[in-house]
Length: 440
Image 1 (cartoon, one colour):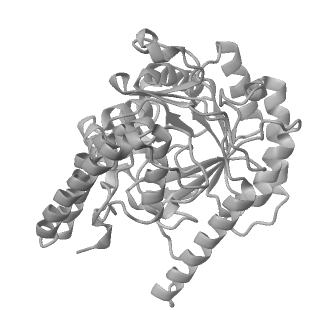
Image 2 (image 1 turned 60 degrees about the vertical axis):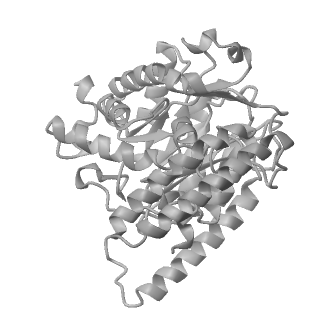
């Protein structure tokens, strides 16, 4: 039986990671016992299902994670997240062997995506589990945010679940091992991958067209942040570009986290223009092969005025920015979150209550940029239908996180299948045909 059959599900808390494995609190022992018992059932079922065809076996593996996933809710959010990252890093998660539906594949920035569904930054902050996460079937995975110097982030507790609302509030504050640790990790992964490719295909042509990017079967994004105490934000982002861009299929300037003081001020017209110009110059001065430098994107907040959005769109068009991610977490507390006692906690809100706010900003930005800049829709996506709504609103690609934290690996194939059905139902032969359909 394949050793990857035993997947601790990826029930996580948003935006948190740490270098050392945490201690399991006494209150979580019950969760461990229940999880262990359920895993025993998974093993027994897997022994039978592994005798059937690969597609059926793969489907069973993803479905089996639903049995274990609820028990992770008994753990502290950061403990659950740390266990999930460790599981993905060790390959103790299902591997998607089934091909994606042909109508959800697309090409963006000259890179081929097998599907437009990606994992947002915050889960794998330190690039520990890239291979395992891509193996789950994501079209792309974004690591980070990565800061130049290691920092612990804000004091704990800093993660608060709102399960009834399908939401999470976090105030982690860019906890990161730093760019040196992440660069070493990505460099080792890149070297191993190249060696594996060479040993498998010693005579393959370098001109052969392949799906995926520098991370192998999927696309890898690197999200860059600034240190809390840094007085020169541009220098922090430039340092990230110099150190990490060689491993990235695209780069993200994160100026929209609500948990780093003063960070969102960088979204102002002059500040953003000056910052993007410096980061673009740092990227372009590096030596690149035929594929050229990685695309540069900016991740913005959902809590912006119409004037703010107009300024950002103007900067993006003037500087020919490669893309925008819309959006980060919100400091607002839309219903039904406002009625939850946890709503008083300071931090960014993510999950289902963010969907309407983020999609409205997405539509506005698509119109303001006249559809000339690829947009990544992020915020509140928990189904293929909602991913499709983001695409019709102007998103070329879609990211999720909180729904993945609650739903686990089984959610990924479900979203892709639903998206393919929505496209076919409305007569779209591809994702690209549907982009911005509601804004035309």
